[in-house]
Length: 183
View 1 (tube, rainbow, N blue to C red):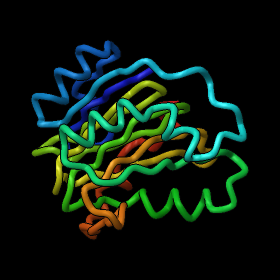
View 2: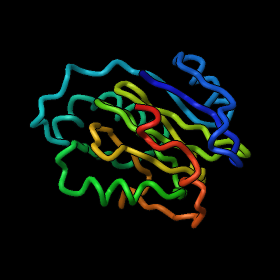
View 3: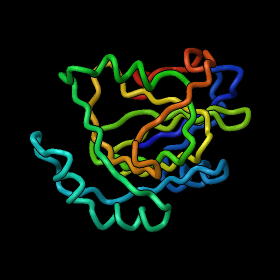
View 4: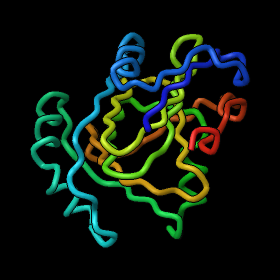
């Protein structure tokens, strides 16, 4: 179930707000400039579904998003408990960073948490299957998929090179509950 928890950016122990309703989550994130929608997912993916099959299944939605946002490329990140790079990839995403372009993700299956540092608050958003999140360019954030990740997400980019992070060197992420506090 999708969940949004809001904390002060000074204190990861004090919960300021919590939302469980998709419309309330969308409204809270929209007030901070973040796009959030819930879509209908296709039938469950077979374990062997490759990225091309996933992109084909969602081609109409991807094309619509590309037209709306000027995105030029889409790919799929699929993580599972036995993934050979799960530890390395989790660590890569755990530190606060920005992107020079929007970060748009549609969760096809599974779940993970986006932490958005917006003004003086941290918006910790547990995204689950069917959730689309659009993080505006230059928004400090981090991402936690947990130690035993299980998700597939379509990623859209304006930059043909794909995911390029610029780390803030802030230790803030270490002060907030990790993925396991949400799962």
